[in-house]
Length: 487
Ligand SMILES: Nc1ncnc2c1ncn2[C@@H]1O[C@H](COP(=O)(O)OP(=O)(O)OP(=O)(O)O)[C@@H](O)[C@H]1O
Image 1 (cartoon, rainbow, N blue to C red):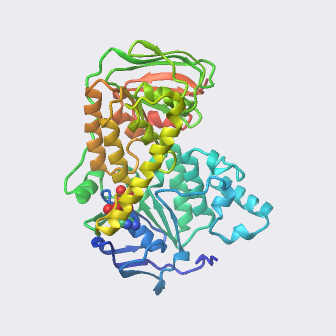
Image 2 (cartoon, rainbow, N blue to C red):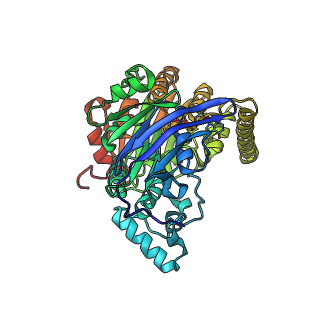
Image 3 (cartoon, rainbow, N blue to C red):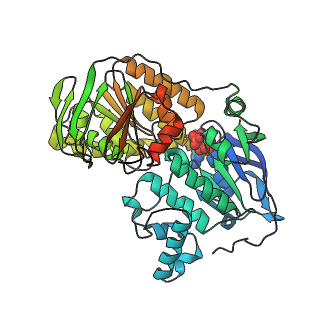
């Protein structure tokens, strides 16, 4: 299917006058943009401005109402474009090799050759994944890395990376930077969509800013700053400030001797009104800790108390009964189920009815969403973008009567202005005494959001840090598995 333009001379990709409406609402209003050969072009703009819509038009999954994209004197064809979509919809039964070559001629080779090609690509990208690993068994960040390796293994003239790094930590972001630069080969182009402005400045050569359905500015990442970008996106400089909310000394949740797999079981307290950030490498036990507290994967524990009362957290039903609200990390897996659990928190269903009721509520939520999308088409109004949907879910979660919240990658997909609103929402919630556990891969985000940071390494607590005393780089050493230096 693919004939790659490997030997093509260096031509730019010219996008001219692209418009696209949904119903009567014009989302893209004449996008002009030129991508130079070998260039990584950032694309930033507020939630719902039309970044993913432009990506879909370029990749051929949507048809523009007007305008075009050209390469080397001809229309840019969908086979010349590959895309990592914001919402991965990959079949979880595929293995890494199948996912990697699903759009490539390589998939038609004998299986042993496919596996060997996948293994080579993974090694080249510095990834420890096995080509035979099933996607369904991987963490979300690893599934996204498989997509990044796919770009490297099967490069196209234009490669679009749509919000792939929202759940990446420092090491994964470095891997992405390395892979993206290699994938251009000095003459192919990348369109890199992100809400992490510091990352755009770091990774991209130039950055295009979208506003009101158009590209309003293209700036060099050498001269732009996060302030100048936010000014161009929102018409004002948005600055996120660290939390300075007072935290009570009263313990809300007390966990003693939770066995997440290390030599020393984990013990910690979460205070009333506190945001406790969790920091660790992927295999540090952080994820196990969180999923033990959501009741999804219970682990042996000496004791848990909530507001001084001994409690059991052996199932999602227990978490729901104790009014522990959860915001799921992945937008593409299980988030409807968590949302359903949050909505049912006050219904207090009997244990034997719980799973069935969660399933029914989740099905209703899916139906509502589909109806909402239908209504958008019927009444000529745009549906919600990914970031907009995430924000709505968070607001509803905050309005619930939770005693405690577990937020996994809470601001993924949100633009800077929405993140600013999110910090205000967090202050409001913690002001009511709600305790919040936050798991965020972006170290700078974790630093901004937390009152205190619990550091895990080798499946046990390695430190407890005050965000005032640590830097993003120190947290990055932790997530890279480089801290503590020796056991
Ligand atoms: N298939 C569709 N039908 C109706 N409306 C749509 C469709 N696809 C996108 N939209 C709407 O078009 C607008 C632009 O959406 P798009 O996803 O392109 O924005 P975005 O800039 O990528 O946003 P975000 O940063 O939140 O991902 C949004 O209001 C979105 O809901």
